[in-house]
Length: 296
Image (cartoon, rainbow, N blue to C red; front, side, top):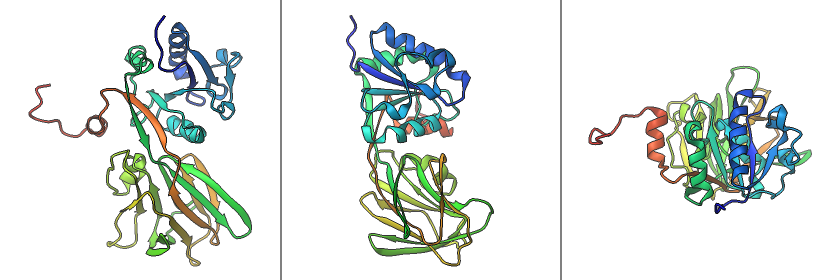
């Protein structure tokens, strides 16, 4: 009998995408061949697996697994990460999307790569996340989470927003911009990169604040300690229809009376192949120049 480092594993697919069905079946067959107990996310399984005796909605898994395998792109990975954030379950991704910064196991060799991971031969990263507390004077606080970023912006019309930002109760800046991105290191290669932000190694304990198209040549992205408490308030002369977007997937309307507090969230454990290196990933995904001294 083969020795398994993980004995109870959950499988999460890409919602509404039938092109991942074959990969899901491959993963399920492989895990069962190793006599591993499997949980399936009902909402993202093929029709043929939704009646499986171990199929439950992701929100009902409640610490029943030791590892989650996510099949899809980085968006699917972010969705799964937020759903399981309090359970500190490591996630590993099989990429069927475009970029694959987070979901990085290739389909072509997934059985071989899974064997390495199941036998304990992998690289574990602990990635910082954001806790976003939305405070309204006439409602209880709402506690939210982001793995990539939290973005404040207009939701109906391309107009500037005006925001005041303080860090640890010390005023940082007044922003007049299309919006503001608060990003984790993981999110530094996503929306924040397009807004001119730096690329940050994914395990560093920092938060990036990057204005979107600021109405000033002096405003630049700022890297802050993850131990900071960042407070954001809306200026009275901001236009209405403001919105908070988390990881490009969850939306919350904002009023001019709302306050946002951004702090360090629950760390997210992410598993990569043992030969994973962030620098290699940058070159591969962003098509950076190769080392001229590398014979390969």
